[in-house]
Image 1 (cartoon, rainbow, N blue to C red):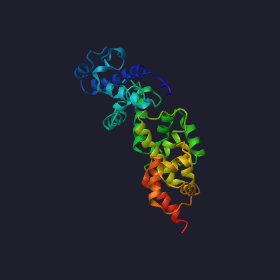
Image 2: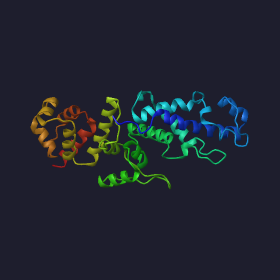
Image 3: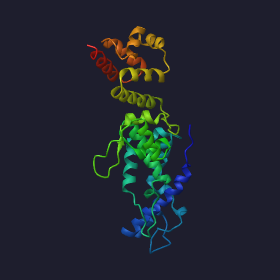
Image 4: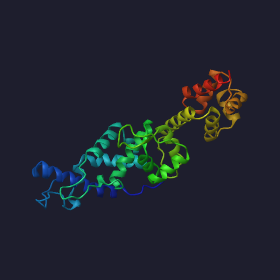
Length: 288
């Protein structure tokens, strides 16, 4: 398994700078009393309260975001206990990254305002992984984070693989790639860390093959699924209880219209059965 590009402690060091900006805004636009209650200490700079205080003074245990970032790190890089991350935490970090203060009153940027900061990478990558596992569309930046690549390299690779980046629905919105197609692309990237959960990996694979069956020919999709499942025709025939001739017809993209046989093959391959049977029916009807 790939090693994370930075440690959790390094992320927490940055998080102290993030909460320092948060405390600064609370003191400047709320009250110094409220900020002192939050931080547990008095600021050294009444002109720019908390904006320039020693980051080590900020006790992260006083901030709820610390626990969320802890979970997000494990989930983003699939280390520690990634299964603790759930839909509620995804909502928490998404609201945090869009609502956090980006600059202190003395003009210094929060790490959350810097795309390549450790905190920003963790929240963006965790949210991207959550979207991937839901089958949602992903932006080029999100693909780059999950693949461990630069955005320009991602764009070049997507273009080479004839994967389309759909334009954003509104002006200024980034383009996106179909989530099911994205997983198939990601799985071929050396830097991609797949889920540690076997069922999630199987779910992602079924989504990938559903998109493959939709976008490519039955013959192409069947050959790819069979190869990646490391199954021979004879093994699959025995597992699905079908004649090898039926599988040969699938491989040629000219199957007979046998719904029961198609269903058993789909189940044996552990793909999305309705999608697989639908592709077989379409290919069979094209011969009529």
